[in-house]
Image (cartoon, one colour):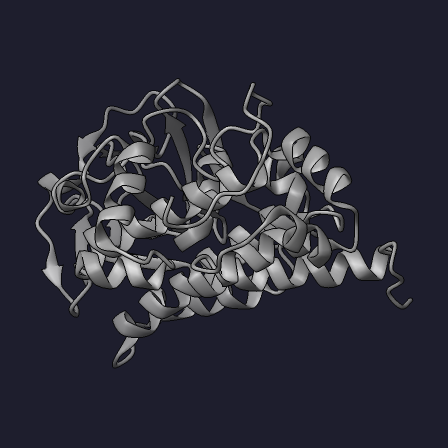
Length: 352
């Protein structure tokens, strides 16, 4: 099938592919810590809550139970992977009623810069009954960070299912590296885990994001997807509603109404909050100079940028280096998909 101006199924797929590629290109796993864990037939591992960090677990050998903070239990078998994007407290257990010991209380033997080895087997069971590869990391999706806030607390991956085509070879390779412990296996495992995490995020998006609305609905809507892509690719451009509507080949009024209904805010408010989200990340994580961030986002002066930043986040730019900025009101791009009362979109320059 070929794309038509109205947007056929092929056109929607192409747009979705562009946006998913944009998302995965901006995805970063920072501050990664991995551990290979050997356990006996009866084990309980407790993982503390780590706000702002994601957890990744891969069960290479044996079986286990994942118990989340609210008491939900997920049965895991060899080859299963788990991704928890919000860093909530949880347990990995040999059975649902086994007491757990804090993961950080075990001695860890370094295997590389980011990978350690934990041997939790009791002396009576020298051969491990289960082998796990666990990781903790800062999960950063760049300008599309709002999507991570829409993700569920737990994604249990069935690599053989239709949602994750191509993931099974990655997890099979991870299992081989975990079990064989060949030279350089720790570094290879870390890289394979990054690929697995990216494929899990992609599978969640491609399969409808569990019917999540808001930003995700916009990514799948040919009347909005081109505009969203343009905003994320050129956040410093002085966009107008008319220009964004032209990107989508619809009228200004149709575009503005559709954007407000789907995203829950006017297009130019979304553009402004996207700029401030990016600014906060560049200031805090990349320690970029304020003047440099202002220029990169299209502001003609540092003062104008500082006013806009404080209006949206409630903090001056300099404070974001110590305290990650949050919006002073709901509405970071993709954060809240429920429609809200907002002023009608009008001209809004980056340096306003």
